[in-house]
Every structure is written in C-alpha cells, then in structure tokens.
Image (tube, rainbow over all chains, first blue to last red; front, side):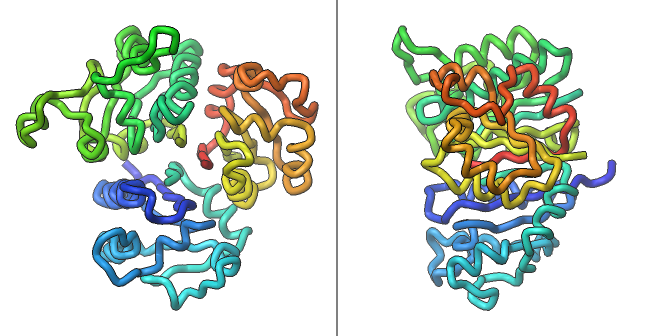
Length: 116
Length: 130
Length: 99
C-alpha cells in the first residue's frame, strides 16, 4: 500500500498537560507505520519549538527525536514566527519556513490532517 | 465510503463526542461504514465506566455504547491517554495495582497504532477537536 | 479535490478561525459546528466574509437551532443538516479540524 501523507498541525502553546506529548506520540507512530509524516507549527504552536533547557515540560526536546524517525518535513508558519518576534535560529530543530501560499498547498496535498 | 473518526474532547467539557456521534449516526444512515472510532486525549474519559450522569442529562457514553452495539462499530480508546486519566482495563488495573478496572463496555483499550491504522485504511479521517 | 475545514470554536478561541482561513485554499468549504456556529451570526460573520470571499461557509442547522440563534444567522451561510455534513466529507479531501 502506498504510504499516505499525514500532516500534524500544532497550533496551541505548550504546557497544556499531556497534550503536546500525546500529539508527538501520534506523529512518531505515524512514522513507525512508514507513512509520509510532516508537521506544521503555526500560531502559538511555534512556542513548542523553544528549548527551555530542562527535561520536564519541554515539548522541544521531544521534537529533537524527529530526525531519528526520518521525519524531516518540519514546517513553520512564517507569519507566526514574525508575530512573536522569533527567528529560525531560536528554534530547537531545523525547520522550513512557509508562506501562506505554501501552507495552503501543503494542506491541499495531504491524505490525513491531525490537529493538536 | 469508509470513515475513521477521532475524538479529542470529553462530554463534560466539550461537545465533540456528541458531534461525532451525530456524524457517525448520519454516516450509517446514508449507507457508509465506520472503520473505527478512536477516543484520544481527554476523549478517553467518555469510556470511564465510573462516571455517573444526572438523570435529566444526556448520557453520551451510553449512547455511543448503544450505537456501537447496534451497528458493530469499534470504539477504541488509547491506552497511554487512558492510563493518565484513570480509564483502566482489568489487566491494567492489576498491572498497576489500582483498586478497580474502569473502562466501560464495549469500549476497547488499544494502542495508538490503531489510530494510525484507521487513518491509513479509511477513505476519510475526521477529527472532532476538543 | 477541495478540503473541508471544520471549526468548532466561537470567538473565545478566535485563533481557530484565523488559522483556518489562513490555511484554506480558494474553493474550500468551511463548516461551522458546535459553538463554531456563533461565527454565522450576521455581525460576527462580517469579520469572516472580509477575509474569505473565495470559500464557501456552511453551518450545522442543529447547532444553530440548539443555540436559538436562527434569527441572527446571516443569509450568506447556508444551514445544513447532519446528513449534508456526511456528504461534505465524502466530496472533500482532506478533512481539517481547527480548535
């Protein structure tokens, strides 16, 4: 069976109990099932990519594992970064910054979209 | 068409389990199939057998159970999310030395892989956010 | 195939709508469900219409009725029954939920 395109959309701030961890678990299992997994951080979701230097309550640490699972399609909404005064070099992992047009195309080509 | 449904919110704090139920009922009425309903995040609370609804309020969990029995639809509950929120199978209750099992029949405690599998197999994947 | 976007939050979580409209392509459909139907109230919908002239917006009639806002809903948003929700899922791909 051809792998499906799964996009996980992270739009909420971190520190909402287990929700960030549970989304990450979903995403990693998608990769274990050898699907074409990508993730888009938008809105306050971009704050999940800031490493607080601690092991507890740190969504960014979880996302450091993405390359281990061959997940390299990590996208960030450029407007969300700009609105928060963030730049790529402040994020825990390498990302590709997308314009609105690119975000629209990204969503349109998915089979499955999973929100956080 | 064959649908997979994911639910993220519980009945006490969100309308999503009820919206999903209405969708599922309409899908069946129109001759579609439901591959699996997956309860994730806070939605695992829907499967809590220990919850008691006041008599004048709708019992969403009971309605899901009735619907599942009538139409042979699988109600799957994520084990990791369920353990965090105290929804335990009898095996889990024994393993973690808790006083009682708390999952309501016919909800089944399963691994998260079942969510991904449903999304792979179904024609459409519909999420009901919290 | 066009995407179906589902919004279940009112303006108390304005970001759900904002994120949806940013990600929706021309020709997509936005379905308002649950408290999302409050966006269909005429004066609220002005905000949506300004930025979403190229998408179709519909609302679940049952959720409009259960909130008693039928008389306030704009004519620009068609009210549909739960069966039509199923039909929209069949005719759109992927299905994207925003909260």
